[in-house]
Image (cartoon, rainbow over all chains, first blue to last red; front, side):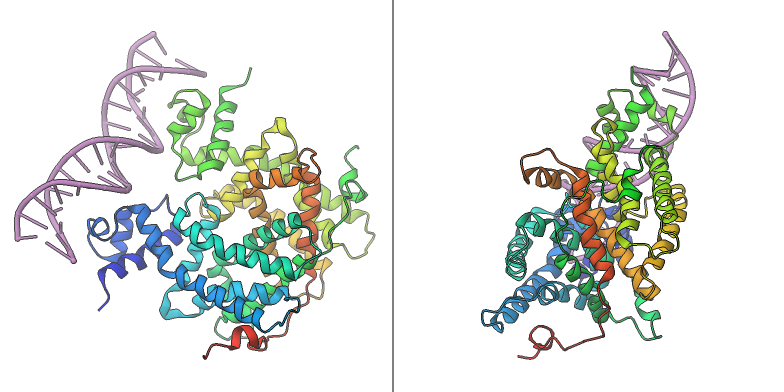
Length: 225
Length: 225
DNA sequence: GTCTATAACTTGATAGAC
DNA sequence: GTCTATCAAGTTATAGAC
């Protein structure tokens, strides 16, 4: 039988993903879990601690997996320059794999991650502190994959990539049908990831435009009537 | 002197951008505006109506401008295929211009837009219904700019682009210093936009990968020990 | 138009019986 | 461990004086 603690975590995960953190009351969560309101304070200390527990439950293994995949890939390089696609794949595949495992219930979790990307003031410090080193590690790999890109520019593009990915995660319900509609098959999250990666990779490889304030005459220069 | 109504809208815009909709109380908004709590119910009907008013105040002109720029560009094409960069520029420049105008106070507004992209269940219907036609119009332009891209794929990439842009908008405070640090000059949002567009455009033009489930052996196939 | 006062309700959290 | 009962605080919203 499922532990009460896990039932609460499952319900909270889903509720936070659906409604966001601030707008979701503990009462509605406990109603969804079918347990009493007081239980959440018994197992977790507070609402914030509950969110933290929801995140930690799955993120720990994801982060480990990310680092493992990256190191494995780099080990096979023998000094050659890493490919952006592979670095991205090492980072994204643990998350996408989570969605693909129906029993894992990682599906709402991914949506929650997408949301918290926007409500980032909520991402508890502890999570930030655990994700931080992983991000640094991947930033370093990207830097070596794109040695000619200014650090400034790399940082901006990394943010763009994070935002794009978070959007797909938030859109999961919509995207799900989209992915499956292709040939009537079941949604295939691995192939979905393989459609996201080319977009991001191409973005990272895009040439850095020289400033061109009003060169696009037809659009930006036609201010005056 | 500034109207009370506008003082409320300004304060609400900033507060919602800072803390999100659900987590921000009307009381804190009114404290920031320096007016009484009852005023908000006099001028606006409810908290939700206030959010709606905040959005409508600036989005109406932005949307008009977007359509104007797009039509102007297409008029000059004389039947040639539109360029992705120019379609994106027509869509994005009204927003980025808003940030660039300090007096306009559009700065918090853009952050708010970035947030609501994630809390999209909150985006009031009216706003959705006004933005919808604009999105359809631009989707059509993109379709003509990329006639070889499957509609399925175009849709996914459009979502990715929206997410990436929203992230930059949310990051505005951080990005601001980044943009200015480049050569000690003041933050230049026009050039920031010109750094975002190549990323997105390259993403749209990326080749559609054939499915390659486990071809990236080093990373995805090394499941078994 | 702007304020005070307060209604009506929901929230997170706790104490204590079982 | 799980429940009921309840607290204290904060919420949106309204009624009515000025």
